[in-house]
Structures are given as C-alpha cells and as structure tokens.
Image: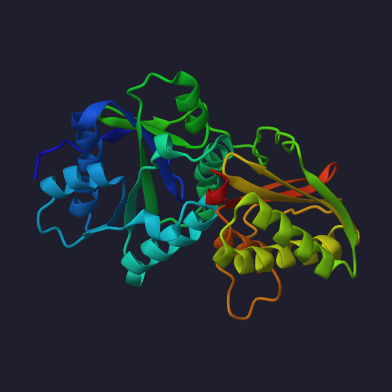
Length: 321
C-alpha cells in the first residue's frame, strides 16, 4: 500500500461524519481516499467502498488482501437515489456487526446523471444522508467529487450538502453546509405538451390505473414494466385520497424518453425520510412511498403546509426514442 499521512482535523465532533472531498485527477483521488482508509485500518474500523468502476480498479491496485475493506456494486440499488439510503444502511450495518465502526467511501457518477431531475435528486440524497444517519456515531462517509471541469456552481451545490470538507491533508467544518430544517429545492418545471389531466377522488382508482396504463403504453414504457407502474400508482393515489383531502389531480406526459405521472393534493408529508427507509415487519402504514421508490426509475416529492404535496413518478420509455 502507498503510505499516506492521516489528516489532521479542525472540526468539532458530531455523531455522523459526512465529508466532501473535491479532487483533481487520479493522484489526488488516491491520496484522499487512501488516507481515509488508512485511518480506518489503524483504528480497526471496517471500510465500505462504492465508487465508479475505474476508481474501484485504482483502489484495488493499492489495497491488496485487505479483509477490512469491502467493495460494493452500487448498480444493485438501481438509478433511483430514493433507494440509496436503504442500500447504504444495509451495507454499513452488515460490516459494522457487533458495533464495529464503519467508514464508507461513496462517489456518485455525476456525469452520468440521466436528467436535470435525476441530478437534483442525487444532490438531495446527499443532503438527506445527514438526517438518515444523524445518530450513527460509529459511521462516517467520505464523498469524493471530481472537480476537474471547474464547474464552481456544481461544486457549490454539492458542498451545501456536506457538513465537512476535506482538502489536502485536513478536514474542517464546511461553512456552506445547509443545516436548515428544509431543503431548498429547485422549482419543478411544468409538464410538457401534450399532457393528460384527470381530477380524482375516492372510488376513482380503476380510472386512475386505466388512464396511467394507457398513457404509459402510448409513451413507450415497456409492457413488462406496466404492472410495476400500476402498483406504484395505486399506492400513491391511495395515499393522496386518504391523506390529501380526499381528492387530487393526476397529470401524465412524456419527456426525453421518460414517462411521468404526477399526483397533486392538499396534504402535507412532514417526514423527509418517508419512503427512504425500509419499512419494518410490524410497521403500520408508510409503505406506499417505499414501494414507489422501489418500482420507479425516479420519484420526486415536494411538500409544504402551504402548497400541499406533489409527487412525480418517472418510468423509462425506451420505445419513445
């Protein structure tokens, strides 16, 4: 292994360490990630690594026969960022059996984001990690970010999601971190023309499913995915009617080889983690959003007391291309 000096730290202690590591080039990537890993190994901590395949090859070349380091395949969680917190929780729980501290390295393939909406949800996922693991005192995560393209706006947006930032051989509190209770979402763009619209209320479930299935078929969603979409739509529409004032509005449209269906109502979802954590066996309710995340390629949720709730389900429509 390459010798690396562990970083010193200016930060105050917090239960969950979540660090952004901007780097340029393979040498800086290895310097920062190996330093993080060596700190873990010296402290007898487990390490979980989830990075793009080219970075995996770099690290494997430096870490020969290290049983404490586990590489995981992030593609098993799928493209939807709404599934990733549950995946990380499972990986780190498994490696931290018996209370062993765990360090994770997670690099998102930002340049492979499928759309502006997907990119926005990936950033939101990074911010939510701080909530999801806030009480996980034995877990920490380093998020490398390739800053070679000098996109300062992109780096600033991601920086706001991390309470700590690592540069060279130091990690420190990040002054740009958004510690507020509410995340500053980008405003959802309106639907593309032509779009279909349907007002619904109790008793309209069959009409909702039929409408979405027909529109999804017309948009190019593959036949074998239609049953999954129908389940997700049923769950979201049921919750909308039950918790959103008894009625709402459905809109569907196609955009950039994607089929979207949107549910709007006057309800409010107070739990930002709703749908992100795997439901327990004895849990009553709370499975609708979880199922939607598991079945759809992307789920966008916007909810406020004043404006109600909007949920958008995305499904790939390859036959539209």
